[in-house]
Image (tube, rainbow, N blue to C red; front, side, top):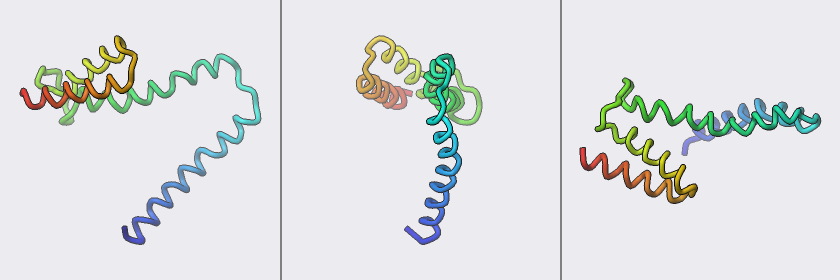
Length: 106
């Protein structure tokens, strides 16, 4: 790893820390309303959906709802598996298996 790459990673870490720390320091000193705490539980699934949905529906940059879209098929299957099994490892293993099988099939 070159010096410029190390500096780049260190700079990104510093910026991330400087953006997040003041908010965390402020929130730790005040009591948040229960409504806000309840609402914050939805942040991780919302961020995950915002990351995954474009990759599932637009793997090549354009909307693709065709059955040959392995990302969409595996994503729907993984959602159903997660809903039914409620086990993260099972969902990941079966979802990836379906994805790889579907790509091989089409």
